[in-house]
Amino acid sequence: MYKIMLADDEGIVIDSLTYIIRQNFDGECRVESAKTGRSVIELAESFRPDIAFMDIQMPGINGIEAMKEIKKNNPNLIFIVMSAYDKFDYAQEAINLGVLEYLHKPVNQKKIVGVLKKAMDMVDSRRKKRSRDLETKEKLEIAVPMLEQGFIMAGLLQARDRPGLENYKSLLDINESHMFVLVLEFGDEKKEQEAAGPVEAGVRLLGSYQQIRRRNICRISA
Image (cartoon, rainbow, N blue to C red; front, side, top):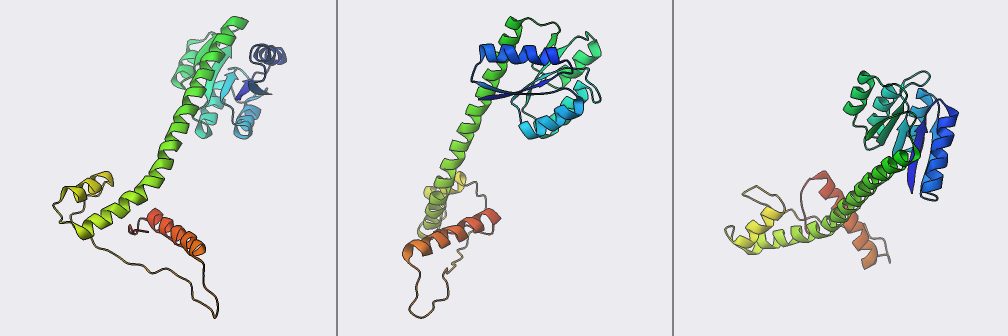
């Protein structure tokens, strides 16, 4: 699903764009619109669109200034400018803002569909990259504690010049030449006839371990 924002003070333009989008991308898009610069900025903040069709001349805040404001909170939003004004200054500012296309009204349906497909491809590419990045991060969250445990065992059991220890240091980006071990004892004060089960104790230990790692106080082996 692609979220598309239409920003134009002419109702006929918004209606035409909405019709074209629904005619060619039925069920793939959610469309919202606004007719003033201020309302466009507010809509962008609440709607969080992926793609925006922007007019330059709108009541109040113009399209260029609106885009500048919107990009502060949504830098990945893909802008497509549609304007009846063929001014070099406007086009130059739009290019500097990284707009995908600067279209001169009136624009035919084929051109709009082509530009929109191009923008959708960019959205898909960014989403795939984001998914890959999250997958990599997830794998690292699993792998790093295992590497840390191996590093500690290597430091305790091997000489400092052994390649195994150096490999762990390289993987964990550790440059220090000396190491020390801090042993922490975890547990709750026991009451009579009460004792935490192994699962509960393990969950608490893992939470404390992650907290220490995030604060970068030290690295310990679970």
